[in-house]
Image (cartoon, rainbow, N blue to C red):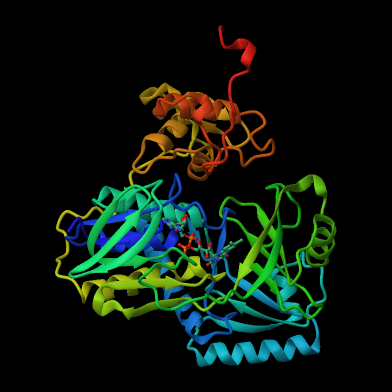
Length: 463
Ligand SMILES: Cc1cc2nc3c(=O)[nH]c(=O)nc-3n(C[C@H](O)[C@H](O)[C@H](O)COP(=O)(O)OP(=O)(O)OC[C@H]3O[C@@H](n4cnc5c(N)ncnc54)[C@H](O)[C@@H]3O)c2cc1C
């Protein structure tokens, strides 16, 4: 057999499963079709870590509750910032109040602790900048925020350092059952293995029996506001949709705020601006850093173990709280694998991410110290975000290093400032070409079809 376990898909779930399994004496590989891991994880820098209060589906609520409880320990261990900022679910009308009461009772029944019903006075004391008329709110101390791609990359890096082989740019074409395991066919290779964990959503291979994943979907339109936006909130805020729209705001791990509108139909920029202003007051458009639109999924996540006796597990579905559920899903999948395969805990497992420096967060004394060590930390490439050449080179050279400009952005924060990369984009691409020994014309922004430069200008070919 080539491998004991093959993990298909390098999203946050695949990387977290790789991390959990890398603690054991197993020969593991992860196959990802893109240039980088965590490429399809929510592209914004902060995800809500839910606590099961908002979730209609009891099973999904349970996965959220389990995941939420694990976040403190896992984020500390793998060095990813996580903040338990709390949340307010806001009622604006009598109808909303009834809904809120039911949500509260359901949450108590689910055993969720640290939740409180507040009257409007208490809500305004917590959030004086609120622009809507609040009648009641459900306050949760449990909810938090985490950077989703940082979490996925940290999981991946530790798994890599503990021996998991990452086969990037390799697309799974089919999975076939063979006498003692599986044959996984990719566009480049054929591998045999004892067990397969399939986390590629929506893909169906010869082995799959369950079909068509139901996608319950709405649309999310949101603004990322500048750090100096006046009127930020401390808690995550959700409205209940009494005025036929659901709005929420999220303080991000980097210190700015996101405001999002969740609707059945896709909203344009101006409509989003109008709706978002209902919650936070008139938004100064000069303080909008970015506008995103994204589908918002609400499938039931299924850990399909119907073929586990044969060695096949599939994680099916897309859900808006999947980042929250990741630690619990990974743990459950890992436990199932362990009860089906012979292995022991590794004595030399390193449960730690390799160190890195964030120039913008260091004191001048610390900055001088690292510049003395490597003068590239003294060359600031991204002026808005204060990211140095040293950090960019580290992002490329570290385990599972970045191979695209997007990968560098996710690892360092370059181009996320005011100028959106107008000043530094070409410098970053040039460093990437130099460090990976590629031509600048071969450097891509993100996916295979995103070349930055299509070719040299013909007239200059002879120069
Ligand atoms: C806008 C937005 C906001 C969100 N906000 C939150 C939030 O606040 N809180 C929260 O908890 N969650 C949130 N989520 C959910 C969460 O980000 C995603 O659901 C989660 O990242 C999905 O992870 P995954 O690993 O299951 O799937 P994916 O990230 O889709 O990973 C699957 C991987 O498989 C690879 N792949 C696919 N086919 C193949 C193939 N044939 N061969 C090889 N590789 C293949 C893909 O390239 C991909 O990398 C949000 C999602 C979105 C979109």
